[in-house]
Amino acid sequence: MSKLIVNSFEEFEKHIGQVIGISPYLKITQKQIDTFAESTLDHQWIHTDPERAAKESQFGTTIAHGYLTLSIVPYHWNQIIQVNNLKMMINYGIENLRFNQPVKVNDEVRLHASLKSALNLRGTVKVEVITTMEIKGNPKSAFTATIVFLYHFKN
Image 1 (cartoon, rainbow, N blue to C red):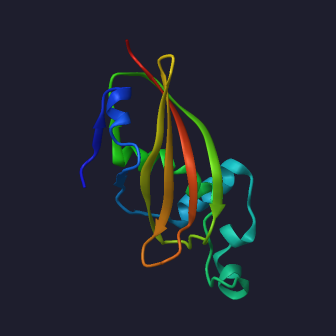
Image 2 (cartoon, rainbow, N blue to C red; image 1 turned 135 degrees about the horizontal axis):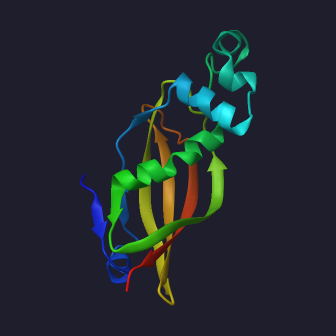
Image 3 (cartoon, rainbow, N blue to C red; image 1 turned 180 degrees about the horizontal axis):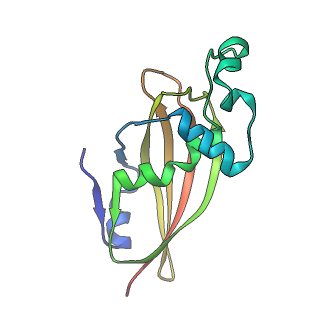
């Protein structure tokens, strides 16, 4: 599936209620997990100690932080859509976030995105995207959430 190209509020509006796209898979590595742990100061062993996780965890290996899987939404979103004619884009909010299934080290994840709404608020476009972070080979998703972006288009 190729990227959706959007140049204006009117073009967003045409896609309300539709699947915008599905990103390619991205592998979550132990290095990513460790780097995220360093950045967030969250060094819980379930994420950062492969030997202990193999012995003591119900998952048999380390798992990614839930917030790590959430933090890669912008990367995946940019694989799905190209929004042109922008002054800036702002990550505005997350609604109804539910972590459903842990992402194990070396799992591959991708984002499934549908456009819930697009509102023109005096030149700023508020876009709500229903997202599911899918785990390759797993029927249960890593998370579901409505992600809210603000797009400020050039005049």
